[in-house]
Amino acid sequence: MKTKVALVQGGYTGEAEVSFKSAAFVYAQIDKEKYDVFPVTISVDQWYHQDQQGNQYPISKEDFSFQREGEKISFDVAFIIIHGVPGEDGRLQGYFDMIGLPYTSCSALTSALTMNKGYTKAVIQDIPNLHVAQSVLLFNEHRPEAVDLVTAKLSLPIFVKPNAGGSSIGMSKVTDWTALKQALDNAYDAENTGQQVLVEEFVTGREFSQGIYRDTKGELQVLPATEVRTTREFFDYEAKYTPGLTEEITPADLNESQKANADALIKEIYIRLNCKGMVRIDFFIENNTDKFYFIEINTVPGQTAQSFIPQQVRAAGKTETEFYGELIEAALQG
Image (cartoon, rainbow, N blue to C red; front, side, top):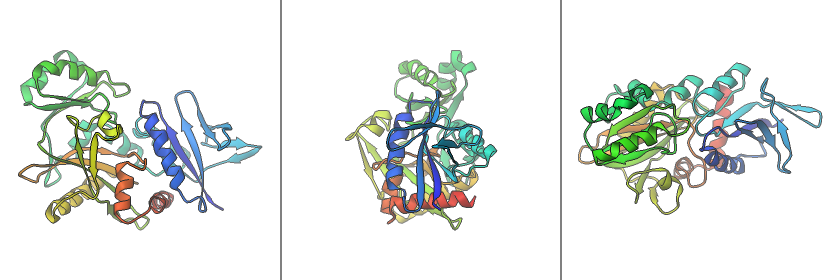
């Protein structure tokens, strides 16, 4: 009997478009000789499986199953590839925990915590040799005085971004105080981000993104880092998803000391946040000091052919088929 895998895609936010692209790539790579893979779309209006012929089958929310020609199809494991709500913020994980279905991502608690950039920094900031930029965390109640709170504590340039959410939606770089109010409004008003804003001082350095996962033996495997160089002011939504705006170097050109330090800190972040499955950690290495500055963690990283994780898997000498098989088997082991 093949293992039945629910490839969960879609979501409730604008990141659904990216999720469908990621899921299509994962579907194409998973070993069909070993796994029966069923794409399952989750949207605000409906949950359903759509087969290759375009037939749709509603998913029962009682046990995440569906009926096909009188047969009940239940899953052995869920491969979550929803970016944002509800696949990355712990909601879906909590549901799967309640019905007893294993899944490939972090737990409900870790997923909820890491969607909140400010709370994540609070948990990891005392890790030795890890640095976090000076920041101000703003809630909706702070909105009337937000400009004053930021200018009193931070120095330009700064990044203003929603405290939850992804794909750099609602994010701005501010180099002049006159632009702060508009940047704050953009971040506060970004869809499905909870009206919380994180403002951080700019770190001058090289930007990297690096994946890590736990293999079927329970051992942590750090993938080769990717260096991100963009022609944009910073790595924003357009830079992420518009071809030609960003240069991505995998594996990154790091000396032995830089690589060893980054690998060790990424492992410690993974452990401290009690992560599972694959995650991606973004960080700066500051110019002249080589200090490691944590940016953020992504617990459901993009999985298109051009995405960081597949690039890093290939650089590590693995195929995506092997990698996704490892994630599924590790999830089944619990």
